[in-house]
Image (cartoon, rainbow, N blue to C red; front, side, top):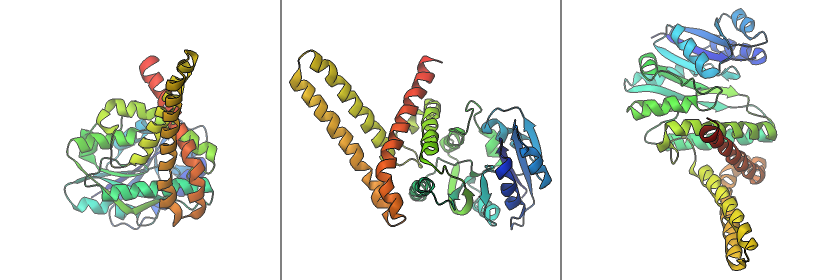
Length: 330
């Protein structure tokens, strides 16, 4: 069984070396090739990868979805394994990524993130990911594989037409592929032992920017898979509740303004009360993560009381502007 490891890279000169070197040192019996697709980088990403023995393909900047598809088309492996240029796999990563394929029904494998970063934001990000991993572990059927540590059987990958290139950034093209495979009844599995170390956003501003754009591009994802708006095997329901509660609180607050204008003080008071109650329930729901993270990292647990409301606002704004782009500016 031959393996192809495919890495999309854009201006990744500082990280691609560690990534490729870690893959080249994998303890695995199977033959494998490493393909780096330089997505129109303006630095020395391609040269850094070539010096370490990777096969380097080049394209004009078009996003990781197209880069991964190019790498897959030019690959020779029966198993296609994807990671990102800022990830450093453990030595047994490839063997753990391929192990689930011993079950002939498995067509896709999800690996796991870890990080060595010390900032509160990065530690918060890691714990929220670990909470989602627990959800995936407990799911009877998996419909989500993130491309930072993903493996697919070649035939099934191409039957599903690979990653959707309408996603211009790392913004939902990987769950979109997972959804397509899951809807065809294909078996996807999670292997928490297939670990890559990642650089999470290390400050709050960068973290919130990422959450904004994740939500912005989710509109495109959910327009293609509306049934996944309510539930998937990765997203915790608390996040969706907090977003809905935030929107509902704003709506009731806005309704109170014309009511006051027209002298409907009692109705306005009820509307403000409803807004306060809903917002309060949304804030109360953040305690679920606070309690969850307490035994893992007490500082992160306390910080979550501030980070989660800000995350919710970032999600709300991203969804709002995503809908505007999808429905109004299209």
